[in-house]
Length: 100
Image 1 (cartoon, rainbow, N blue to C red):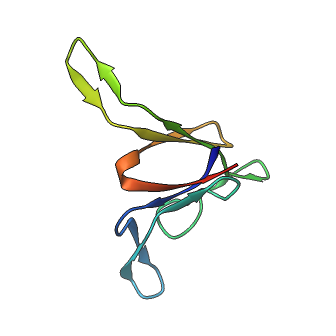
Image 2 (image 1 turned 30 degrees about the vertical axis):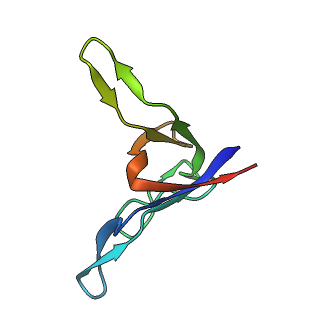
Image 3 (image 1 turned 90 degrees about the vertical axis):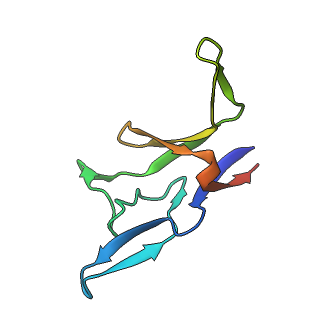
């Protein structure tokens, strides 16, 4: 099973709608193959002639424990993009859609 999309829990993100100059709240949605939202109601730029897209979403499934500091680190989703960047998102703030 692989993750095909993530959607934020709650209001998600907001950006200022340029035409009405007011904040607009929208769930943040990320999908494999889709362009990367720039969090301002648009999409991130291009590299050469290619648009920046999500290539893979992975889940750090189990809690990671730092035994020396006695800390428990929460689950995260890693969003890999076509420009080589990785965005790390907290798993408790996103709902994942899984597929075969």
